[in-house]
Image (tube, rainbow, N blue to C red):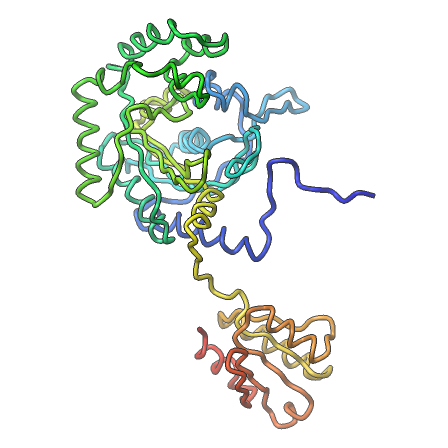
Length: 420
């Protein structure tokens, strides 16, 4: 009988690598909590229409990459390919925007799913940390989210990432640009599918990564030349705020990203150490998305940062995270009486906040001490019949090799005080 394997394009998180992923998730979320963002969790699947209307019918995500299913009752569902539409749907359904305090600030963590050709940095199942600020149109909010992401990356020790920044205009100025871009694209030598995309959302063509397409885009109209004064002022204010905060960025007039709902500010975090899949995160403003999915006008902005790709970026830079040992104390009983006593001490130490493990399975002293060393513990707790008769246990420092007797009723205080 063959053993099962994880589906193609997915991965399992197992120790010790999983500790790095948990540390990255915590670091990416920490600045958000300090800035007043509350945690939200949404289902792993949603109605297909939420993504087709919000993300866009013409996007690769909806047209090629969504995992869809039909329930026994005939409902069309999709595994979530991104987080923003789900979070906004949940906020609207729970009337969070009516609580009287806008913007509604939310952050989330979870798995997302896209049917893509697997390669380094691109998976069919991937993990993200996201943030959304719903219900306010303010360049300071756009700048805040970019700054929070930068602070998160820097806290991990990442230094070689770059920020690409652009404005996609709004409903006032984008129609004229759309028409100019369509005229330009219609004259190119493109396949039928790309030509259909020109009519639905021509900005998607600019996001086409194929070299044969990119070569023909030289001389394409630039959105910056079509921005209205309001959008120009808004974008410049974002740039000024970022500069004042010491954030370096690159203006990229071709940056459009892969989702239809973006307006005005759009940005991407890239790391050149990741090869072709260089984006580690990105986001932007989506002022019309609420109305697209049946809600009121709620100008909003947000981002999503890839946990998987952030881990790859850390490896590319050779950054080793200082991870605390999961086990600080390892208890080794010598005999049945000692097993009961030390097991009680293990429970007491854990309740005191000390990471403690136990030599399960009746291991002999030699094998138990090997397990203690493999656990990463700083101290081993040993006891035999003679120790118990004297009312003590032996505490051995596994780094220095020093060992001393400690009274049973003082063990918890002693080891709590010596925690690294």
